[in-house]
Amino acid sequence: MTDRRGHRAFVERLLIIIAFAIILSMAWTVRALLAVLMGAIVLAVLLRTVSRPLRKHAGLGSKASTWLAIILIATTMGALAWLFGMETGDQVAHIGTALPEAWRELRVRLLDWPMGSPVLDAIESSLNAAALPRRVIGLVGNIFTTCVLMVFGGVFIGLEPDLYVRGLLALVPRSQRALATQALDESGQALRKWLEGQLLSMAVVAILTGLGLWLAGVPFALALGLIAGLTEGIPYLGPIIGAIPGVLLALVAGPDKALWALAIYAAVQQIEGNTLVPLIQRRMVALPPALTLFSIVAAGLLLGPIGLVLAAPMTVVAYTLVRRLYVREVLAHDPSPTPPAPAPKAARERTS
Image (cartoon, rainbow, N blue to C red; front, side, top):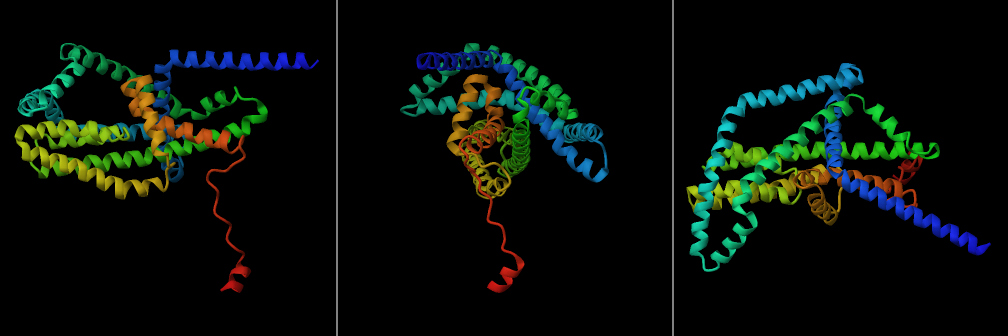
């Protein structure tokens, strides 16, 4: 009898391992689809965040407020494109032609340095200049297709989120649906707060960087500020990626301009990191830095460049779900204990 139970337990564990391996294999096969899904969810959360005050103050329904949020976002982007699009577009086009000149300038300076030749060979071999245009065209086409799918998916999910939540909860046993609902609500709230803080941080970095580069006389300051703001969405690596074009273009104008540009990028990151980030993290899920760093590396390896952008929101959702479903439910430990309740009024009066 004991042998039969042991054999049955072994078969059950083996089936669980096989099922888990199948799920991982399927996830690996459709990993690009998972990236599109995560991007659509982030966009849907953005639409719902903008529509919240419209529902609250204008008394609109869920779908009507979401449509109005879509119109407001599209109108705002169109107005910004009309106000700054021509100048920014010209600057971005000039950046594309000026970067090769900046690279040639940097190449000459590296060759004058004793250790510059091996460094230059390593950079050129890693870039593979012959295949670089083809790789860039393929990358841009892939990113464009992914973004289009994300936009449509985000609009559909944002218009009827309850439909998709009910469909997801239908896969959960009835006894666990209340817990799953709470976990989804907490992860959605955490993602919304992260998105609000991230958008504010990106806007501040774009404005400060563009203004600083303009005051320093660096060419294409507006476009470079926009690039710095967009790349700020990638934790750790984003500021470095966003600073490379500015420093290279400033180098064409002279070494002093390059030093000024480098100082401006560093100063903006210090201002953002020491003033804005602490204020934002009071309302956001505070992710452990090592966890964020490893998630960026993993998402980049699995999903490519789009994974670098989606690594942070995916980590926020995963971190919230693990804390709610595993740490609190399985381990019976609350990672964020609530502060003690205030003493009754009579007790406060006696102590005072």
